[in-house]
Each structure stands twice: as structure tokens, then as C-alpha cells.
Amino acid sequence: MFETSIALWALIPDGEPIVTRSSHLLPVLWEGHPAMLKIAHDPAEQAACEVLQWWAGQGAARVYRRQGAHILMERAVGSPSLLHMALDGEDRKATEIICGVAARLHEPHPHPRPPLIPLRAWFASLERASQSQEELYARCWRIAEALLSEQQEITVLHGDIHQQNILEFGEAGWKAIDPRGLVGERAYDYANIFANPDLADVASVERLQTELPFVAELLAVESKRLLCWVIAHAGLSAAWFAEDGFPIEAERQLRFAALALSQVDR
Image 1 (cartoon, rainbow, N blue to C red):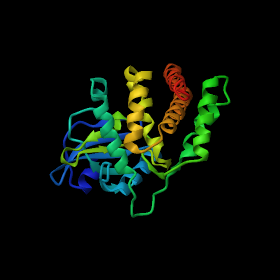
Image 2 (cartoon, rainbow, N blue to C red):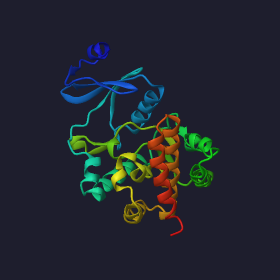
Image 3 (cartoon, rainbow, N blue to C red):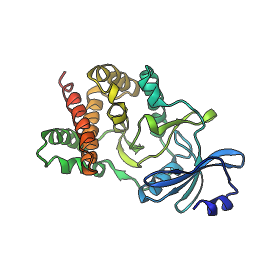
């Protein structure tokens, strides 16, 4: 599977293949530098590569070469995990790193934007779920619809910013991987700092009350508006889990949405 690209770009395998639901990956050396050879089987993964190319290394992994579904890109070489950092008492430090990377992604760019998914289209699953008997979906959708109808500071969004999608690239610092390629309000990209299901141990009222105002001030975003994006995204995440047949995970995200809703009028 990798042989064509290995020969084309004179690559040296540098690790074992990695298989995901949508891609095959192989750590390689390219011109003496650590790189990752990725074969994207999913059209969404291929579209995400266009966004990475557009960012050109500005806050995101750099794409060195591309031929169709075969992508040669920068490989993370640092060992720290932001998820472990967040769960091991350094949540604030991990959050600052994530916000710094996202801010770089949102900076003005001189080139025309690639094809992107409008944020309203991204929320289609939550809109459908709002018609179900679960009232929480409807409450989350009402908040999401209000935000989507009057979006502010429109920019290119990563769409899946969380602790596992920000990696360390040695001297190049922290960068994002695996974007979804959206366009919409800047504040949305920070919602998953709080709604990431892998952060269940720190998904608490106390964290919302301390970290959300910190993030809002750091990014010059109105605190209540950021909270509303957190609620909207939690509802959307629950809807995705429900559609994919994971009711326990969907319920957990709905519980977090209810927790966040309790803080709206506080």
C-alpha cells in the first residue's frame, strides 16, 4: 500500500504502520526529517488535507507532498500529551497551549480559502435530534440556532480542537492535526476544550466556573457566548454518538450539556 509513495518521494520507513477507521499511516524519514505518510481513504480526510496545505505550517502540521489520497506530512516528535497534562493537574497549562495553537490557525491568511463546511451545516445532526423526545436536544439546538444565526468573527475553523489533536513537533512547537475544515465563528473552535468526552474526570461545574472565564478573557470572547457554544457542541456531540449507536456516550454528553445549561443564568 505504501510502496508507490515510498519510491516516489524516496522515503525510509521509520516505524510500524498505523491503521485508523479512515486512514493508513506509516512513520517515515524524508530527506533526513521525521515525517508521516498518510493514505486517506475517507473523502473528508482528503478534504482536511487541503486545509492543512492552506495553513502551510501556521499552527498546523505542514504538508510536504501530496498525490491524490497519498499525503506526506510533518510528524510530531515530542512526547508530552495534553490529555495527560489536563488529567494530571496541569489543566490550565494544557488549555493555554490549545488556545495559543487555535489563535494561530485563526490568523488572517493571504491566500483564498479552500472548500470548507459552513458551521450551520456542521450542526445538522443536532437539528435532527431536536425533533426527538429528548428535551435536552431541543434546548441545545435553540441555543445553537441563535448562535448560528448571528455569527461573529467568521474565520477558517479546525472544527475538532481538543487535547489529542494538538501535538508537539520539536523545535516547531505545538501544532494541530486532523482538522475538519469548517468556516464559522471563531469562538466555536474553543468549545471542545470543555466538551471533550475523554475529559470526563474534569467535566465539572467547578471547571466551567474557573476555566471558561479564563479562556474567554484570554481570547477576548464574551464568557456567556463561549458557554453557549460549549452547550451547543455538547448537544451536537451527543447527537453524533446517538446516530453512531453509542447511547451511553450520548447520555454522558447530554449530562454535560445539562451541567453547562445550569450555568447560563448564573
